[in-house]
Amino acid sequence: MSDRLNSAVGYKPISDYGVIGDMHTAALVGLDGSIDWYCAPRFDSPSVFAALLDSQKGGRFQLSPTGKFTTKQSYGGDTNVLATTFDSQEGRIRLTDFMPCFMEKGELKGFQELHRIVDCLEGAPGLRITFQPRFNYARGNTIIRETRDGCLARNQRHHISLASSVKLLLSDKDLLVNDFRLSRGQRIVFVLKWGNSSSTPAVRYETSRKLAKTLSYWKRWVSHVKYQGPYRAHVVRSCLVLKMLQYAPTGAMVAAVTTSLPESIGTLRNWDYRYSWIRDNALSVWALSEAGATREALDYTRWMINVRRHSKERLQIMMGIGGEREIPEITLDHLEGYRRSSPVRVGNAAYKQLQLDIYGILADSMYYLHRALGWTTKQVYENLVKYSADQAAAEWEKPDSGIWEMRQARSFVESKMWCYVALDRAMKIARELGYDEDWRRWEPVKKK
Image (cartoon, rainbow, N blue to C red; front, side):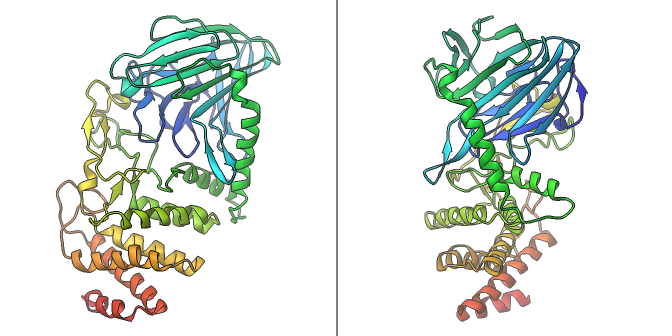
């Protein structure tokens, strides 16, 4: 990422953020060392830090030099471990941010931890920590209490601990601001732990061990990316982001880790995208499979089969990452929005919409898996392929909200085209697998 001078209090360009995550949730880390967005314990949980959506009220966790500085960000090789380097007249600091993420006993280990490592590389620079959690989208009161090993923050329902290898002193009941003088070679470790209501020494979190295992996990995963052309670095980075968007417990993928970032500054089209859209998921796992990472597609397909098997209702265009069907949409009027682009929304009423294109996109992705991996079980066929074609045949003439998610339904050529694709792909699979009755039933509708 490009160098920038530290900015005045306000909103940073989105390009000034790096993202870290553990396939349960994610955080945005600014070039100024500020975590301005973090939800826990899931991507779609209420926020802990939300300065991204209100620079004054939202809350942040910032580590940066005390004076003027320039800064740059980069990832640690082909991983999702982020390094931010600060240069000032007093010296150089490297900040390493990551969420522990690696396999143990055949399963992805979830720690609900965020580790921040400060290394003084040159000189004796000053370091400032600003810790200002604001639970539940900054609704209600958040209280911070000093402990021997750092501090604890809580509100009526939630707890989070901040362990520190240096002593922290509370500035106010809801704010901690401390300054330190570093020396060359010095390292300070901070560990944020969701749900922890007790004081734990920073050393107990084994930051160095977890960093090494997390780096190893991401590098090993990247080894599956088979593309070796001139754009490999870009392909790998895109794959790493897509992988990070997958919710490990189910296989569902969020469309984004944020809510209410506007399509254009100052406009009303600010939506919550921390949910699983069939369209986005199908295209994402298709891209990962094409790159060589096929397990993600299989995990997502298994999840979709389970969703279909446990629900007799129509497959929704979007769901919660745990399979939730109802995602009520509300506005948070106490937050001003990114660069004052209001309203801030939580939830997404689009879950009620009919979007006919999902049938074709889902059937097309299943056809890809069928051709590329030979992975078309009876469960895949019955719950996803046949279902998509049956729905397309029954509903293709209906008005819908389309890919644009219009809140008033109308007829879209794009939607009709995808219904055709659903029938075409399902018929091809049915012919190959011997489901003759099905493809003959769909053929007259396809010809229309």
